[in-house]
Length: 68
Image 1 (spheres, one colour):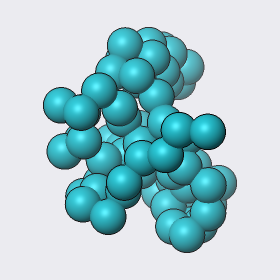
Image 2: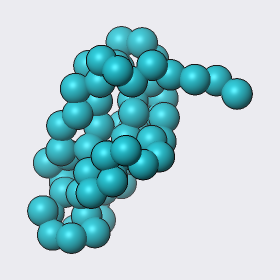
Image 3: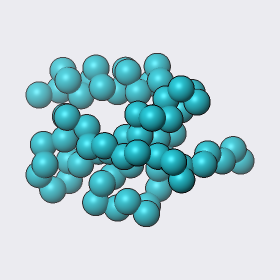
């Protein structure tokens, strides 16, 4: 299993999160240069983290932008 050190992650809420319950996605942009975009549910900051490639993150954001 691969691990990723998230101790330096600077979490920011996605602009596509509406602020309503159930729609709060955070990501750590500062780790993108390492080749990974950590994504989590802001309501569960100690919960699981999804690790995406920058390309997969870009595709996810494009999907979210078109799903209004």
